[in-house]
Amino acid sequence: MTKKTNESDDEILQRLSEKVERAIATIQELRRERDELKKRLDEIDDDGARYRKERGQIRDRIESILSSLESLEE
Image 1 (cartoon, rainbow, N blue to C red):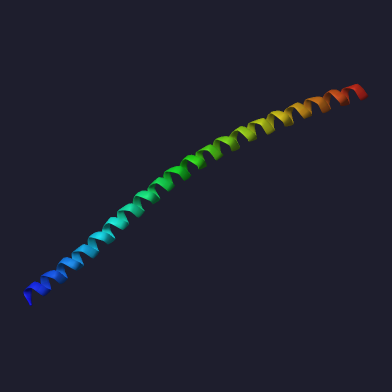
Image 2: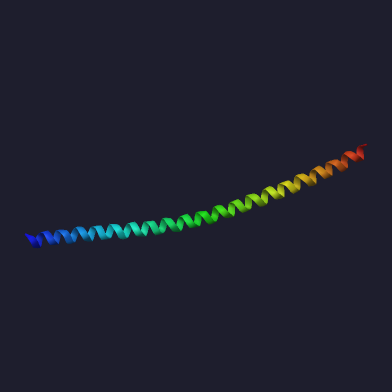
């Protein structure tokens, strides 16, 4: 009976070991995904800042043109 119990314990330990290995692999994959998403978010934030700056420059240019046109009408 001791041998059967030991085999059973070995099987339990083997299954537990497999579950731990799968968990480790899943955690590593999730960390890689997280890092990629952080990188993409940083890129999006940079793009957003650039677009806001460009939009401000365009707005300033249009206001300048409109002012010039208004001064021509006077």
